[in-house]
Length: 513
Image (cartoon, rainbow, N blue to C red):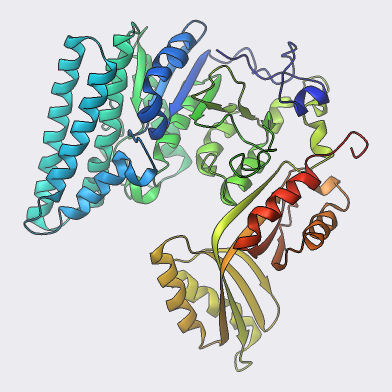
């Protein structure tokens, strides 16, 4: 088990290392010694054996461990179990279609094949095969009922997608037992009391759910709980109200409810970097990052952790550590609440390099700009209101905006065909308010850093660097909180722009500091 992050000298932080002094960032010793480990579907699909042997099993030496699993996936999210279950649900609404049966059969076959490959015990294999058959039979009953009724309610759709997490956790429970770990399958589909499903998604609701999950996990005694990321029916439906990130939220609620020392989110990268390491080889691992910076990076294109999930854990003063399933010994990146440093010696030492440079640079692709110039027949105070009523009716979110009394430019994320169509329809409707033109093939380039407000001239340096590199800027935005500076560039310039900014703003000599 990797030790908690420590207070280190500047050069140690910049080289992504830690010293033996663990004083500054260690959790308060009064907290419980639970570690919650959340594993994504791709990690489980590709590295299940390593997760069992090299991560979960060694972690039990010094901590109480509970693991939360997403549905298995061996490729992209579109090829994962949850996506296939959603396709099965859609297929079931077609009369006389048998596609949903074929999808479920393929899902069952994939899980059984994984068990046959990794589980040596014939008894455990047989037990798991029986569980898969029972779960898939139940799943098919819901799909068949939907086909007869020609309707799938939000609750039924939740039950259908929840089968993915159940199959995944059954598999991991069997695998851990096969490796000598006394594990227990924890199905949360009935954890929420039926009387509460009509309530709103308030913080009180989430707190109650977290305590209920924690109580169920404690009931496992000395066994390792393998917890389904699917936690039943919530007000408005789990999928519709929370989205595909509900497994992260489940892990967060458990961590808060049980008073965990740390929530670990295991991915296929070493942590959070100063830029996308797949695109910028010089990108550096960030040892410690604030929740605000993580939320900004998530919004602007880096898939880290959903802000609401992070809010639950950080609000309870529990650090989140992002780690790599392929490098269990690595320290990862700790998302650390600022106020946990209060009362500790010299907390500024941990974040001192942040006062010298931004934290990270990221990009968000598939951006379209809508420019609307008023026809001046409308009062200026109604101009923006009319524009946003149209965008709201088409469920379009504005990522960046630049306005004047009679002109507005808006950047929208058009990463799906549905959003692209919605933008075209909205553009036609906006012509009632003035002249509309559309610019496509753009990328948002964002520089993020909580301490940028203390860095005089960082915006000037950013735009001067882009200008010297021949990168034209289409639009500029800076938030009032000064945590990010964003601009829009042509998509074909995005990689060059990100690389040159990373080199100029992040890689510097001691003389530049």
